Length: 187
Image (cartoon, rainbow, N blue to C red):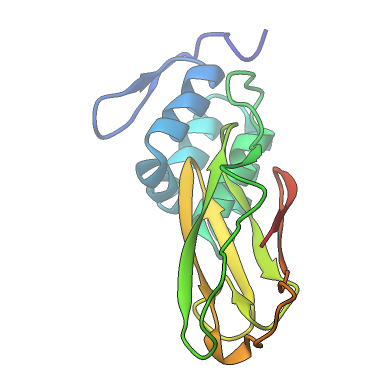
């Protein structure tokens, strides 16, 4: 079993966390994410895996280190490791529907959308709106890129200048597409 087969020499993180096999290394990366991303960029994983005789993983570490986004690069390396202890990411939401009630036209409002990663590794993707008055992004394009290992709170702005007065409720949707699944939040 490659996942639990002991390394000849353990990998040790700067905080003292010792990893003696691939399962422990994957969990160590998960628990020390920023340190693991830095070790990847510095070439420490490439050197370590090459020293184990795992040239395939050393090459994967080199490719991952060259990836423009350090977090995504680390996630790519974890996906290639023969570890079973680190499950794939899984998107979870606190709620699938948000009821705002009556809002005054012309004034902006905000609510928080809480995303959770119920798995491990890195969950990444985007949150997009299907209407102009509902904006999950800091800019006006209506889309926000997401990247999280545990939880992220996204402030969603209701653009008051895009609301209309009337007796019939307005409805919109936030679409979340990620490597850990997709979801829709009705607003």
